[in-house]
Amino acid sequence: MFEVDEYLRMAASNFKTAEAHLRDAEDALHMLRERLENCLELMKKIPHDDLVFGEQVDTSVPDSQPFDIGELHLVGS
Image (cartoon, rainbow, N blue to C red; front, top):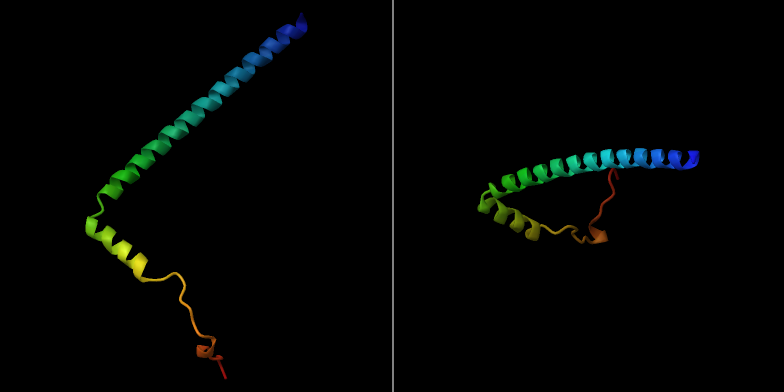
């Protein structure tokens, strides 16, 4: 009978610990939601012209530009 009581106490303790962790996770998710909503509001305030300009820069400047190895010169020679 002692073992059953001990198991029940351990289960209750684990339940309380799990409940505390779930509350912490819920609080963290609420904070994340608020931060994302604030970010969305800031993004909505960006003028449309700035967004178009950013897209134009992204398309007009290639990530890597090919070069001819013959164009390379040694430094200091």
